[in-house]
Length: 173
Image (cartoon, rainbow, N blue to C red; front, top):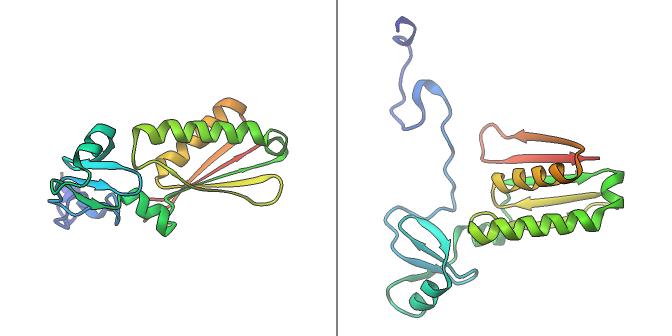
């Protein structure tokens, strides 16, 4: 315990002994926000979380019970603010591009169906054997990279940013 006496605690949550805590998402709603609905994707915000519920959305739409806003994920897509980038490249990718694109779209749709925050911002082809996929969360980029690796093997590399919530995922074969 003697070695901890000289260390100072900053007093902030998650920043004990000078360690960097998790960064806050600038797009998340402020504390105390009540029920809201997203006018773009029809997501509902209640009890500090966003989720999809078609019946509840229809019930709250057009009433004064919920504010009509744009959810954080739709704002990230509009502002082009990716937190994850997946880069696929190689000759194998060029030969199996349609199969891999179908896999990526199916996985992204499956994940987006259960989580409002995880969506693909864009899929951009750079040349004939390279694809860059930008996602709204770092977890989705990791998930898509692992899905391609699980299906086709190859080389998978993750590179996390030290200060921001951001990851670059590289797959090559």
